[in-house]
Length: 243
Image (cartoon, rainbow, N blue to C red; front, side):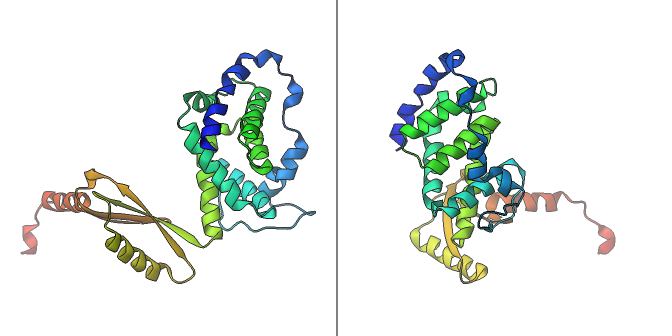
């Protein structure tokens, strides 16, 4: 699918050149917005449809749009599919400077943006929910937030599955036995019912040790931080009156 997306991005050049030939009637209709739930669910009001609870309280542009998408995808049991499509979109877009520029350029007319995403993601065989969602972002000038929205949406789906993402930064990759031991330790801390997902990052600048992050917690056990703490301690003036 990523290959199809990359090839589809070439459509943008033609669409942008044909800007003046696209009529204003091609913008996504209000019915699509309501069907997706962006207007109703963003305010928490929906008297006609089943109420679905979002597993995390999120705010801001990314939080509002990701929450609306989560509710719509939940109603069609397509959370995993939508998450996979957004992941593939981000991976493919990073390889296309044309698409990257397109989603950031607010000077492109809304109807041109909508037509572009509709054609690109129809060709890539994306689900209707994802295509409608991307069309709404295009219409509202919010495509530039897609990376943050996608990451926030993944946070919601992980919370739904009871998964906790733990980022472990080290100088070299952790050996399998050490990763297993760390995962078991975190599992004890987080308690039963949580599925720990470890993501390893390599950063030689920490000099050694580990930096473990999950949720709002950061455990910095790196040699770099310890050295900085020691340096600050040594620079503090000595109070001889205490001797």
